[in-house]
Length: 105
Image (cartoon, rainbow, N blue to C red; front, side, top):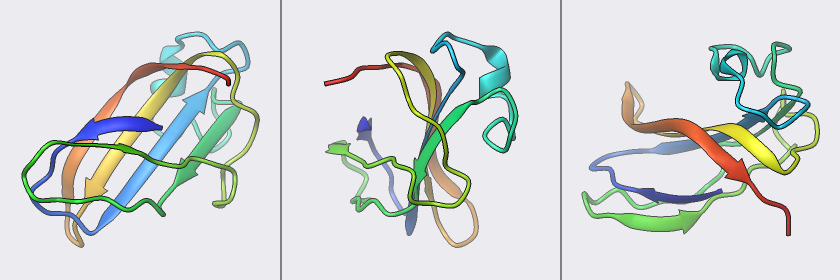
């Protein structure tokens, strides 16, 4: 996942890409919990990225894959629901969720 982000504080990053079987925009995929057997037939995620929280804008590449429990399926060319979250031990610090294009190299 390629992202532009800014945060003042943060200790953990979570990146997630969910998609239905046809790669189309589907509000059910964006619903809470859809990665756990809901409308999303593919869900790739990661909590392993490195990032910098210093109040400045940054651009980075963040891996999403099938390593973490719950991740499944195959992403395809089309649309996917992307979530990018930076958290502290107590709360969310930065979050962005939106429909984004999935491209295949």
